[in-house]
Length: 141
Image 1 (spheres, rainbow, N blue to C red):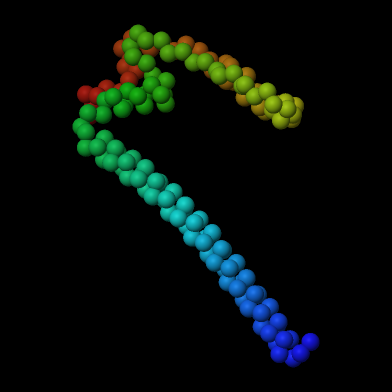
Image 2: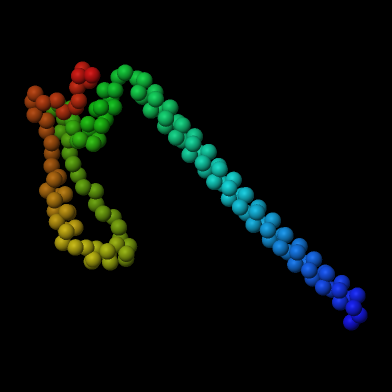
C-alpha cells in the first residue's frame, strides 16, 4: 500500500471516530435537555398546585366564620357528634390475599396480635351525654 493511501485511511478513521464522539455527545446532551424539560414541567405543576393551596388557605384565614371547619375537625379527628347523634366505629377488613401477604401473616409477632385485640375492644358506640357539647362552640370565638 502506498504511503499516501495509508495516511488517507488513517485520516478517514480518525475523522470517523471524531464524528462518532460528537454524535454521542449530541445525543447525551439532547437526552439531558429532555429530562430537564420534564423536571421543569413537573416543578411548574407543583408550583401551580401549591399556589392554589396557598390561595385557598389565605381565603380561609380571611373568612371570619370557621365554625364549619371546627365541626369537620371535631367529627373527623376527635369522633365528636351532634347532641343526640350516635357515632359508630367500625373496622375495615384486611383484603390482602397475595402469597406475600400470607407469608407476612405467618411472620407476625404476638405484639401485632395484641394490637388487633385492642382495636377490637375499642370498637364501640359513642353517645353524647346531656349538657356536654360534642362540637366546638362557635360563640367562644
